[in-house]
Image 1: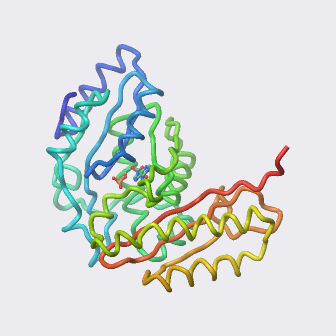
Image 2 (image 1 turned 180 degrees about the vertical axis):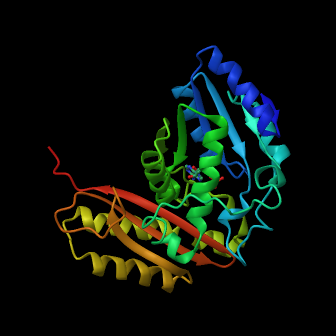
Length: 286
Ligand code: AMP
């Protein structure tokens, strides 16, 4: 595995593969890699000849007072783990290289609407930061396919919409959430949990599963299911930002005829803000 720190080195490595007609898959991350990230890498390897991973803690997607400074940075361990996989290239730029002084935040990519609801409402500016950095990375890597986790469901939809609207010739592939044995979605932010919080944390996923069971059982009072989920989280000491049932395609509130839904939740537990979701298909079983 080659590691590059600059856009110039990245471009020249990728250009050589392109010349040889090799197909390139890209997995953007913020590092502190866990089994969820590695699942994306394995998936990417099945889709292309070369896998490029980026590790960049993107300041633009963190709001004031959020955890940008404390976000776990473990580049040397991450690099060792990736070197044991089939990754061809690790791109780990310095912050100054991505946002040279003086031209920070002047050009932005905003996917209107989708960026302003749910996590976008709780974290204003977050998805503009995500879309802008992913657009930059797409222009640098120029992959054929890019792989994202369904764990960040809203982010996946924001990227899909950006790619469609801006005509990036890139397939966007989503990979199901990788979980701990007790159901907690793997996340770099789980390290913020104390031992007691870590024991309570899987309740987030259990609340999503209970809501899914009610939907699968034929219940269509979405408000009642959402209220029960939120109450369950509060009772366990979570501070929910939202617990909501939406259409899987566009995250709009569903009607009773909608069949492809997703239940999404975000909640604070101690220092951590946990997010999770569960897609639910209500298609009639044959
Ligand atoms: P991050 O490093 O948190 O920005 O995540 C990088 C990529 O890994 C994103 O596409 C995430 O959705 C994905 N990801 C993070 N956690 C998981 C997980 N538990 N399962 C699957 N994908 C994940």
